[in-house]
Amino acid sequence: MSAGFRFRDYVPEETTEKGFDSLFKIFMQLITITSGDVGEALSWLNELDKQYGLTDDGYGMGDFIEDLKKKGYIDENAQEPGSFNITAKSEQTLRKSALEEIFGKLKKSGTGNHRTPHTGQGDEQSTDMREFRFGDSLDQISMTESIRNAQLNHGIGAGDDFMLTEGDLQVRENEHKTQTSTVLMIDISHSMILYGEDRITPAKKVAMALAELVKQKYPKDFLDVIVFGNDAWQIEVKELPYLQVGPYHTNTVAGLELALDLLRKRKTANKQIFMITDGKPTCLKEPGGYYKNSFGLDRKVVNKTLNLAASARRLKVPITTFMIADDPYLRRFVEEFTEVNQGKAYYSSLKGLGHMIFEDYKRNRRKSL
Image (cartoon, rainbow, N blue to C red):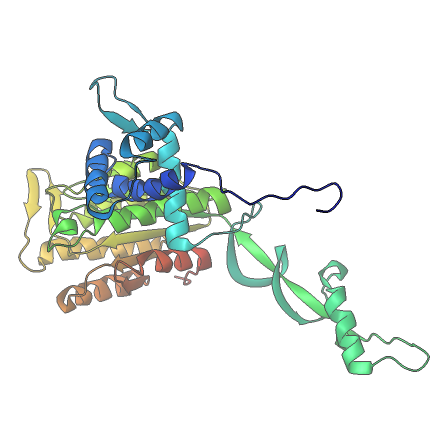
C-alpha cells in the first residue's frame, strides 16, 4: 500500500438513473407517436415491458412514473384525476431529441445566420482558405498558414533567414450572413396515415427539429409552421407534439395562401416555403363550400395551385416540396409545380426527410427569379 492512499475493490453504486434514461428515450418516442397522450404512451410502454423486460425488481414502471413527475416531465390533469399531461419541459425535450436524432449534434454558435455564395468582406470567418488578393484586409490573413507556406516554399537558410512573400500569404474567407423567413407546411390529410405507413410522426419530428435548430443556431431567423387539410391554419411550435391527422382532403391552395400571407409580413430579404406532403391537391374552399375531387388530378384544383406557385415566384419566394410518396403520376404534378415556381423538389423516403430539409435550410440557396 502506498503512503497516503488506501485501495479497495471497486463496487459499482446502485443507481436507478440508467433505468430511467433507457425508459425515458422510449417514452419520448411514444409521446410523439401518440400525439402527446401520456396515458396511451404509458400503456404501450407497459406492453413493451411485458414483451421485452425493460424493467426489473429494482426499478419498475411505477418508479418510472414517479420519476417523470418528480423531474417535471408530466403533471396530473386537474380536470381528469388520475390522468397526466406532458409539461413544457417535455415539449422542449422532444424538440431537442428530434434535433439530435435527425440532424445530429450541432455545435452552438453565436449570432450567425445563413451563408450566401458571396465571399470577401463578410461578417464571419469560415474555414475556407485562398491566396491573398489585392484589397484583402490584414485581419483576414491566416498567419499560421502563411508562415507554413513560407517555410515550405523558401526553407530556412543556414543563417536562419526567414522569407515571407506575397505569394505565401493565405487568406481565410469571410461569409456573408443573411436573415431568413421560412414557412414549413405540413400535410395533415388522411392519406398521411393510410396504407399502413405512419407519415405524420416523421413530419412532426422534422418540424420540431427545425424549430429547435432555428432557436439554437439561427436565432435571428423566423420560422412559422402551418398545417393544411381541408383548410390551413398556423400552429405554435409548442403544439407540434400534439399534431394529429384528420379526416381531411388536401387543400394545398389554402396552405400556400396562408404561407404567402405570413411571409408578406416579414421584412427579411430571404423568404422560402418548405412543404411536406404525400399526395396531390384534392380540395378548394369556395363561397358555397368545399370543392373536392380525390379521383385523379382535377384541373380546376391543379390550375389554382399552379397559379399560386407562379405568384410565389413573382414574390421571389421559392417553394421546396418534399414529396414522401413515389407515385409517377404525382411526380409529374410536382415537377410541373416546381418548374412554374422555379423552386426545388425532393422525392424522399421518410428516413431521409430530415437530413434533406436540414441541408436545404442550411445552404439557403435561392435562384434569382
